[in-house]
Image (cartoon, rainbow, N blue to C red; front, side):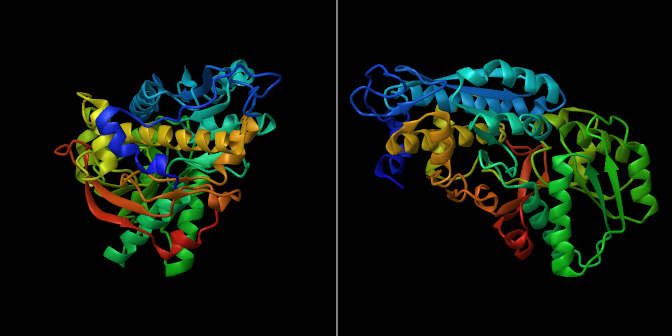
Length: 407
């Protein structure tokens, strides 16, 4: 990676994020008058406008709010250091409430005035896929990626996290009887592919499977079916709201199965809910993000920027999304094309180093190259740690995760 990116952690600790000073001439018919930099929607001579679609008050707010905090913090630091090519980043944040229709409405209202979109929530990200593709607009999601070439994922794909988590279970408990809940959307589809990859690799079989609507608030019937089938592990391919409903049913039925959650459905804030004790007692998750007390240059820089913010590991997901966006925009400037299409293309040949926060990220054009890495961590849920989790297996990549095809 270029030297300016390599120095980012040291610069952050000393004076803030390292930016790149550059041409500040006003664009002339979509390009800088002197340097020939092409610009387009969302880019002026002073600013680059980014749309952030997130859930601040709906069923996914337990994850959406801290993620937005992390993204805001990164952008604030980046702007203090001069922004991108002399341009400050402006975030236009919209609260989708995890509602796909609201996400589409917000996107349609902003599409002509933004250079890229950051989107939290699989159902809402799914809803804007065709529109952002038509606009050649980079869609930086927290899970995915989706088939469209403009889609890039910040976190490990559901397929990957599922494959690693389920592989871990079968390695630790070869005779495990696993039931699976699939949400009836892109979340469930990805989890299903991960499960199938593990079953093909190991020869195991699930004992029960059930579909769940993304808006379901009562999963008593599905959880009862898992128990009747003898499942001692229940893998939940669910979003945050349906995860709460599933754990609530487990608690009400006094069902002692180990609950498995791949992805980002869990956050420490959930421990304050009535389902919290059951989560802490029975849940294992993939925690494919750095922990609050991790020792690394990247984490020192992250925590220095956050200051006195209450610890919450989910915040770092937004920070890393900001780091990715930073790299993509810098690469677009170096390519001479800061249009939405140019930013999208820049993302497809970028390498993002996070100074130890995560494994390095290398992106390409094909869907299997637009997920950051194929490693996961496994964590138990615990109210003792700053993150609400305890790592039980450090970063690893299973054979099933290596081989699973993203779609």
